[in-house]
Length: 191
Image 1 (tube, helix red, strand yellow):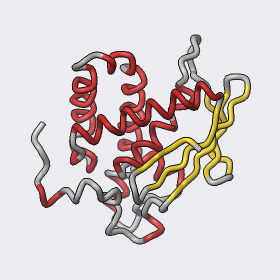
Image 2: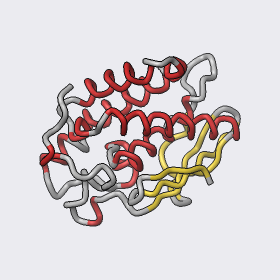
Image 3: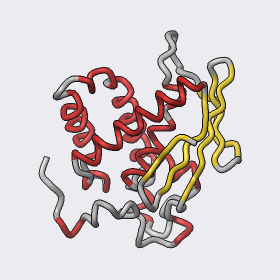
Image 4: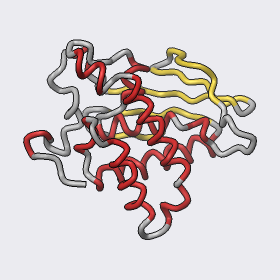
């Protein structure tokens, strides 16, 4: 995959690269706390104390921790500045630009992100091999082609993937917990 044009990509430390020019109500907030409460294999979510969404399970016969996959979405949002799923959860779709709303924050973009998160989860064990991460990142970049997130570098993807899987594992081992996302600094940590 070719590198994006320099003019289409802001400084990699600018975690508002995709929404910085939009009204404040359409940008990711400065910080968010996502709480995962697990009971009997079901996870409920709260954002800043407010319940959101349906109960999540692994949705398969053998438990594999996927019920905590929203940690991956939050990691993509905080580390890469991209997550149509988190935008929808937070009510931060960029509606002031109908094309961005339709193409970058719409249903197809959300499905692509869900598929990316599933791929990260499915291939997590292969990431321990020397070329596992680079193969996964190349696959994800193909999936993201044509969306604003195609501007993300392989190194940024690898960092976000590793951080997201670490957060998922920690939540699964603890049986839940809180993640705090800092969208300005591009940071995510367990609290």
